[in-house]
Amino acid sequence: MVSEIRRWLTDRKETAVLVSEVPAFQEYWYPVAYSVDVVQVPRPVRVLGENYVIWRGRAGAVGAAVDECPHRGARLSQGWIEDGDLVCGYHGWAFAPSGACTRIPQNDPDAPIPPRARTLSVLVEERYGLVWICPGMPRAGIPDLPEADDPRFVLIHEIMEVWRASAPRVIDNALDVSHLAWTHRNTIGDSTNPRMNNLVVQRDGHRLRCRVSYASRLTAEQRRNTGLSGDITTRVTNSELVQPFVFRDVMEYENGLRHVLLKTATPVDDTHTLFCQFIARNDNPDQEKTAAIIALDRKIQSEDRVLLEQIRPEFPLQMQTEMHTRSDRCRWSTAESWPSWPAKPRGYHRMAPGPDRSPTPPAPPVEPARRRLRRQDDLPRPLRGTRGR
Ligand code: FES
Ligand SMILES: [Fe+2]
Image 1 (cartoon, rainbow, N blue to C red):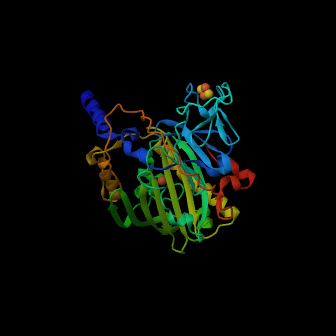
Image 2 (cartoon, helix red, strand yellow; image 1 turned 120 degrees about the horizontal axis):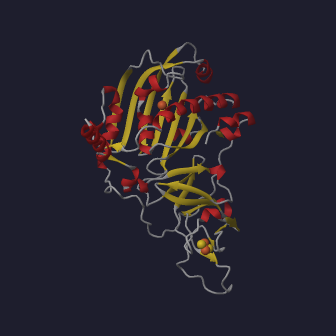
Image 3 (cartoon, rainbow, N blue to C red; image 1 turned 90 degrees about the vertical axis):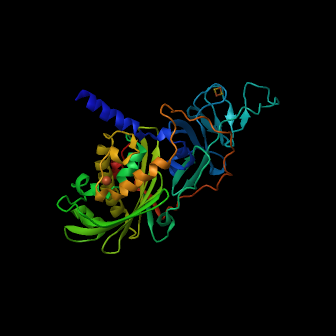
């Protein structure tokens, strides 16, 4: 019996993959902060096990670099910004957003600065009110999320928090409609009617689309948020895995309401994920309704989080490692696509520094469209307590 348990556990680990074992994941863009939170103060962020620093420098452009000073390795995020340059707090060297060192205060002012004295800059851009970085050379752009740019929709930021769960498990949960009736039985799930109807799954390479309808419970808060009446509604979900860790779901309600759920799972490391959720709504909710929508969506996600944080971080590569039924068809397709990602051998955990790169030409600072862009910090003070960290 003991050897059987050991074999079972060994099989689980050896037929699964961690995010650090898939080099291709370094070649995508990941959101790391809200744009409005990136100011003229260096901010540490972490992606795929590496530390980076981001900051807002000259003309409002955001800079990003490996969080390690080329002089003695101090964390640049412990420094400060001066005249748009990042100043290391250890010996005061200053660096432009391009990575070039602009000052070594101990040297004579006219002494040349060694060309090797530069930070390792990282690609950074702003979109949808978020700061995105790409640790490697991007194989795809920041994903297009049509409703997030559509003036008929209002964009609302709801959640940005680190979960003690792996990014594949977080995205797997987003694609998994069959859990709604159970995990969310106290909010929107109807555990007396867990059947899913008209499930259609389409896969195009790594891009995955699922359409399904199911019963969703209407609590008093959900009635207020949707404008529907009764105890149960039929909700149609059109979900899409846009990139490995970017999820979009157009939820259609019977009254024409569209609640578009946008989720990103930035792999902080093998066991932690920066989970970000924002939504686009076509009903232009007022401030009070926006607060109620955010509160309910946060409650729903906390129901997922409590389960996901207890699931092992490895993502199974073989179908037979875990069990699947017909209602898990969306999940089958994700699992089927994963083995095509070339994985590094076990034991690889540290990303080798990439070649020195200049950042993309500084994009004009993205001024969040204040009329359309809302987040919980914009809400009246008593609601701020709902923001978890
Ligand atoms: S370690 Fe950064 S200036 Fe010396
Ligand atoms: Fe969920």
